[in-house]
Length: 303
Image (tube, rainbow, N blue to C red; front, side, top):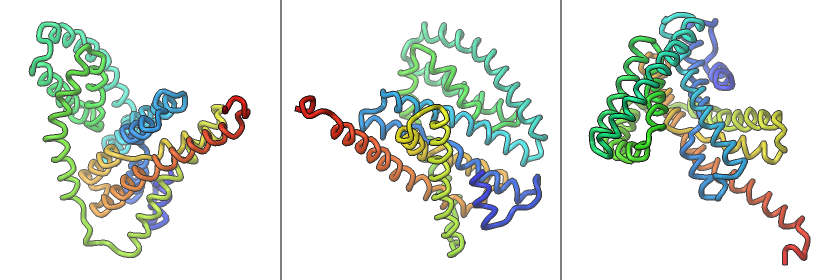
């Protein structure tokens, strides 16, 4: 909602269902997902990853990514004329239903297969094929975002005994092949020749709205769940980070003409700022509480 608002303030909003309206929606969708990897790294460095607040933030960030994928699916379906919101949600539900049944069968097949071919290259190849196949089925047969299929494939594979082995092998291909191609394609699609003072002002407002909306939204949600104000602020700060999902959403929007190449600059700026600011704020908040606890501790206990 805040993303739609900041886009409308700079570029205006037409009636619901117009191309201009869906452009604003995609700007909002970009702001939904939280980068789990950056948040995990920050909490690990502070030794808070296994604390109650740490598990709360990580759990919320994972659910946030799932919601972001579903919101992206709905936005793509409506903007490309695949049907109204009801049809898009129905297709999404059918995909998850069929994936649940199919995933159960694939899980037991993979479990039997991996039992006979433990820690071989066949394991990695099968996992990669499953990921691509489910991505293709999600987009081609159900008209939803392909990353939804890839996400479901990961859920199926994570339950296997060889999950750590699959992850270690996939990470090699990820860092050596897929990730460089992904970021190179993002760089090629970015246009910086249209930079104006107005657009730079939009980038600044876009980043500020992205950060504050997470702090306020997630912080108030934590307060409604009876967290203290201090802990609610930590939850909000931990949810500020954006990463690869924001770039994926922007890339999907560009592919269907809903996001202009210049907006990649705003997204990259948001990722850089949030990745730096969020860990710093989290560390300050946790250190502040620790110092307050030390001051309130009796002198004899301190000694």
